[in-house]
Amino acid sequence: MAPDQSREPLWGLPDPDSQGEFYRDIAIKRAFAWLVDAILIWLIALIVVIFTFGIGLFFYGLILFAVSFLYRFITIANASATPGMRLMAIELRNFRGERFDTATALLHTLGYLGSVAFVFPQILSIGLMATSRRGQGLSDMVLGTAALNRAARR
Image 1 (cartoon, one colour):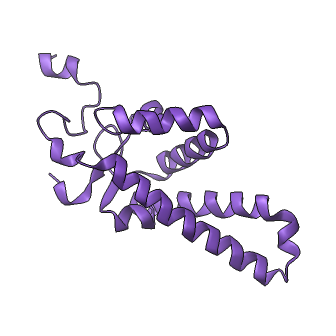
Image 2 (cartoon, helix red, strand yellow):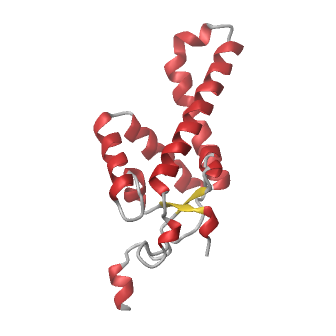
């Protein structure tokens, strides 16, 4: 094993020291992407409520959760990024540097929803995104994934 491999556990992701352009401004871009996605999810959930003639208001929390899950899972499984991430020119990659497959998209979505369901994991995830070398959140750390600037592709 080469010395560089023992130092770098995520073999396929770009090195943040020698290829920093992949991670430049990732935390702030992820924050803006999250805001765009949150607005879109809220609007979709509102449309669902309207189509239920208001009855959906009684189940709004469940509708919002279902829309959020489906929105994130489907868009990440298909494009390795949500619409907000695509707008901010970032995409998610696994530890091999590849786009997400369906299983990784599912695990990442479940990890995200699990972390936002509780205050401490969400604060921890935001703190990790702001301070880690690769701008990884809690679910990224667990899965070995990272968000990369799309324009800085290899």
